[in-house]
Amino acid sequence: MGKIKDFLFGKKVIFVDSKVGNMEARVKRNNPHKRYTWTSEHLIAGQMKPTIFLLDGNYEKPYKNQLNAVHQILDSLDKIMPQIDKAVKNQPDINQKYKEKDFYLSDIIPYEAETGVMKFEVIFEPVDGNKKDYISCLWENGKLYQDFDGNLTEIKAE
Image (cartoon, rainbow, N blue to C red; front, side, top):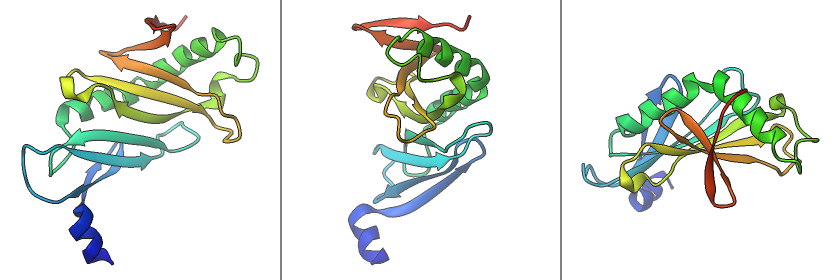
């Protein structure tokens, strides 16, 4: 089954990163111009559940600029979490149900990756898997933004 899977979907390649864990991609050809999706699920220190990472890259590894941006997000997570707490407090439909520690960083995904701009969708979900609310933010150049009625508004910690 493994050889058939490798033939159909490509050979599994693993790239090890100290902050995002073992990133995997399925590579059919060593074509430097083809973009591959690299994935990882890794438990970040201080988080209650693992975070899923999706990054673009070539046949060898994720693109360095995307990996560096994700490292920036992770390095500033202690500053981001109070911003998420503020975002929760500003949403009356969920602010009564949650506290800051009820959320964890669930996903980091490139946003408009084709443009080459380092933007990521950063998603926070409740630790309690039975609760369905979540907060989705846009991260760009060290700042978090949330979409309110079609307008991006920067989320700043108080």
